Length: 453
Ligand code: UDP
Image (cartoon, rainbow, N blue to C red; front, side, top):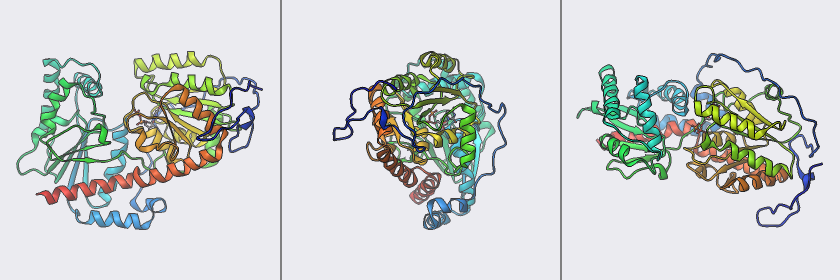
């Protein structure tokens, strides 16, 4: 038996929680376990073939017929209009994942949508990565060489692409300079910014702002991410696809197989953070919180994520995480390849609690994914997370390692409250953060812009 500590106070009322209180869906209590051998999980070394994109009708059981009819109705005014989406990568990253679904959906709504990806050499992507970090407030010296590289590749892409669509949507800063191709009789150009521009490096922002202000509108993911601009702005939350491999319902048998493969013992509670091994995701803080909470309640911690094999800093962070976990068999560290959507889905579904203890965050799609799966979710009050996690209603917001430990302990010992948070969280996602809501927002924006002319 583990030592029993100070009782934990629930929201509002005092209570005496001891180690006995822990339970999960299997109803097992806190029992000492013999350390298990760390096993090497079987993870496919190559990406599996992508499943076919869902059709609009496939969403009906999730959002209901009336919502779907409404979407078809609002889109009907745009029938035959053409859209082009442009970003900087076809695979990897949330933007590509979203476009993969949004483009066929708009197409099916008879708003013909093409997706083009800009090209560039290593020099270009080094500069744009520098821009990305600088726009998040990082240090960056904008040299003349960096400006020239950005403009040169922008020019090369402009030569290669044409823009005769009714709506051109440019995602993020990398292709922002394509606006130079906008002619007086062009369609409407929209800049869709997925990043937090609240504290940009002034030099980089000064370089980009004149380009951005030539667009007809800008779209941000949160009011706090936006800048003061001379053009109209819209707020579109990011979204998840409930039918993607990451989020679709899974067979219990498959979930169990994944857990067996990864050495996750489902007879005891499982607390999971899915994240790239990145300092801003604070995996070391999660381990500290685990160690604090573990003194009072028994559970396993799963830290699963990629980004360590192709990112030198990721490898360093992973090593630090492994060292911090030591030989504790209840800390399960999984390095996953980018094609692990089904495994991530299964891990999230097998979890008792989802944690996202980021120090900085964009929107935090892992939070959306956890909430969608009806899981009590504990997440830091940073970036777009408070839009999703409304404290004590759709999840628990935390500000520190101690807060995270407290909430883990509280929710593991108050499963009914956790279940209520999970139900509320799923409804909140259904209302606001699903792909179909996002498609509707695009359609509405296109309609509004068309009428402005
Ligand atoms: N993700 C993944 N593999 C990983 C880690 C994360 O597929 O190893 C997914 C995760 O499920 C989510 C997205 O990548 O869909 C991460 O988005 P989020 O907004 O949480 O964070 P970001 O990595 O974009 O900062």
